[in-house]
Image (cartoon, rainbow, N blue to C red; front, side, top):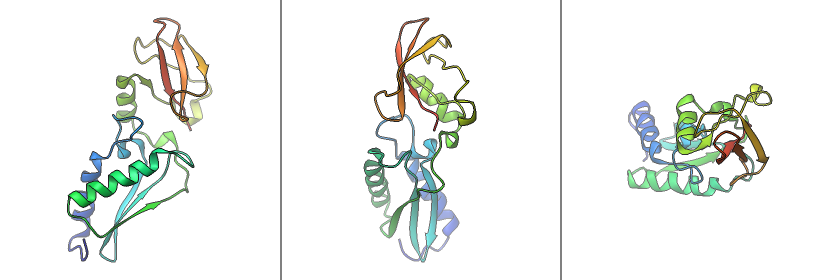
Length: 162
């Protein structure tokens, strides 16, 4: 879309469109929920979408960029660029409380704030007990750990605080 007449309205529209781009590894969270969507801007009439990977080499980023392109094309936004920003590095602290609630409802224990992660108890997303044991620092994806609840005996993923 070249020559955007009202950049602020266009940016708001594109941000709303990107609410339909979900993380391929955690399908209940959008890239906005995760904090991966850093910025939407208009530069020289072109739409610029900036994303930050959760960690360097995250395999989901290719799918996320492809999904952004599909959503923009379907909406008639054809003059766009998708940029990747590595600094500042993404942190789980960029996830809001609504995103953490969605994670827990999906069965993944949300991360504690980074400053509290070493001392915060891990709460079971099923029974809410904090009597939990980490089985492995590596869960179903690199950003998760495998934990078991000592109360209900159910295993679950913990989204690691980064």
